[in-house]
Image (cartoon, helix red, strand yellow):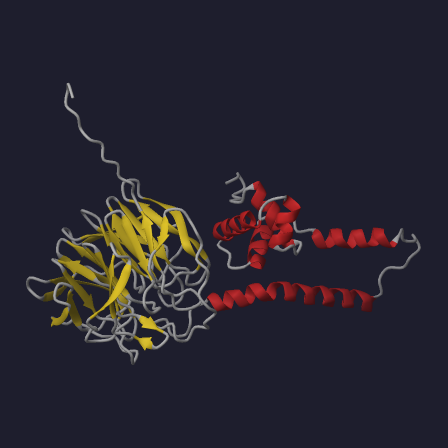
Length: 440
């Protein structure tokens, strides 16, 4: 970043100036003698750095900050005058009607240039019903982007978003969610060795906007939004060994779109939607007592945040408050029942998932109100966030996310349509060095 705060590299500035002149990616690649894919990579970086949703928005932001030169209209006018030949010194100024016509034409051109960006901005805004994707325009799922450390696995048998995902032993368990046919009760089990999904026993209550936690080989799934749009208080538990469900103590109040983490053998639920409003409640479930209890409220009233446990605390990040996404990060210390702020994420995110790998947390997905071209990693030792690549560009809302050792899985979600992706990210690389004894 330069002294004037410009986050763009010289090449990115050059490309954005060509975009401002109306050149396509193909034309830019030809003019700069670089590949088409290189231009696309630069454009993704430009959008991420400027937090822009469209080419027009990126141009306007960079031009207003003085980071690019957009004097192309003036230059084009001068070039046209030169091409037409020298003008007479005695030539009269433009008549008033000519000036009015000129500015009206310029305004029309500007409107046409801005319209795609404005439409993209409107399309990126949250739908009226934040608890369902059914009201969103289905544009078709995006093409997966090949990026380092991500591998694409066998897809879900049916696309869905807002699902719960649990990882246990050599299995992934995808539960509930919403698909083209509505809220689902389906359960699918993924065998990591065979790279395939098989059906499990259906969940007794079909729900979406849920998360799951694994305790002692059991998968706990509280609350959620039912098919009629109501919030549920039910707690249902799945046993993969017997492929059976059972009911346990219901939540003290209906709750959906919460952030969930397992810490010291207990479920912790943060915030969410109670059927009427976003809340800051914190609920803890003790399986041994089959009972819920409340804790100190969260710092803000948000839903669609994400949580993951570290050895001494639970980190809760992001969320959506009904108006905007949040980048806030807060740590909850269960032993002391207290909250402490941590470094904010690089971008506001709502409707994403988070999983832990040692001292690191991985935030996967988001992009509710703005394009998101990268995921994020939180280093708890340095209290810093850094970007990591994403195989889904633009937005990746409501995927199921779970960690299994150094592997972070992300399944399904929404990005222009319901997704059936099964993606795995290689987190921390671990090297095992054999020990030797003297003389061997």
